[in-house]
Image (tube, rainbow, N blue to C red; front, side, top):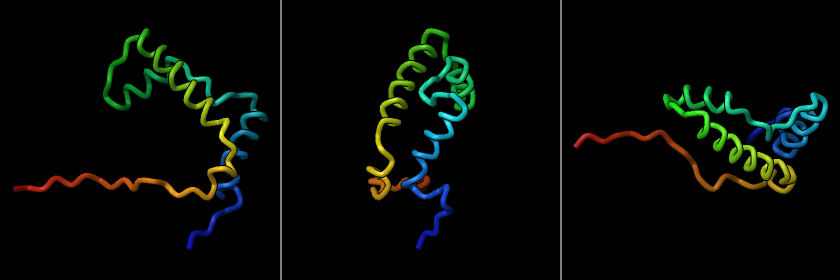
Length: 91
């Protein structure tokens, strides 16, 4: 059994995020090329400015589309996949 705090319930997470964005006047879909460079660095990748701008635009589109999905529409949906760490077997 899973016990959620009110602010962590799946049916309120998206609504809370959108409300906090409205209060701060920010938009999650606004991704900068500097943020892409930082994420690439964390992942051990190098990305030039043109590629970073392209990635930022694509990621912003995806985040914008995801933000349009009502949180109550997905609150009861279970994940389709379970990710587990890869364990190499020695043969």
